[in-house]
Image 1: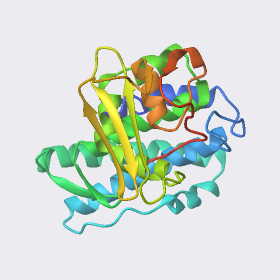
Image 2: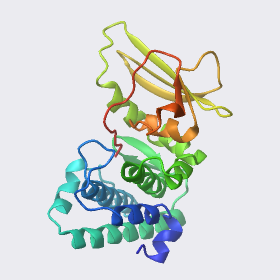
Image 3: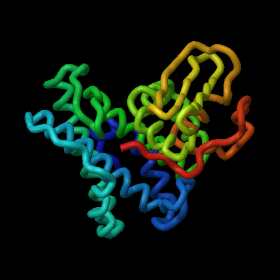
Length: 253
């Protein structure tokens, strides 16, 4: 079970834990080539790294974010050891996030994966990750859809994680010297999300609805698309532009 003090700061890991425990470690998931155990390893590595980087900043000795090789030590653990380590790292992140909230202004900028984020990002990102990766286990069940539909999930996916997500996703585009791609993702009653890429780079932003949408969907489906996932029900989105979509999974550190 998730410790009480963790659940108060990071309520999202609890439904994630229930979904993991309902499956076998080597069962497949919606995230291509990942097993349930792989997903748990990824979450353990995320919790550890978020706490490590934020604690180092609090100590006055900032460190750079490690890549996904940070997950390798957890692959050598038994299933029971992995569970204990996951819960321990979540508890540690809760403690560090609480100390940062007390000692630092919420606007304080901290280096994370080659960019700067503000202090609340660290707890919020560990809230977002179990929601997304729970969907990898369960697909479009009620709990997943309700969590993905929360406005803060869209905000976090665009503002806090959008740039590295888009950079990863645009690497497969063959635009050429003068080529450009722009797509407008629309959810009724909300701002559009505009993604663009050309030879000079990529961008993602909110914008007022204007003109035709490339894809129109509900909010939960739009978050899944931003993270390189497809909803189980294709009727949940309408494509107005050229066909296509994300294949496999995208993960932002």
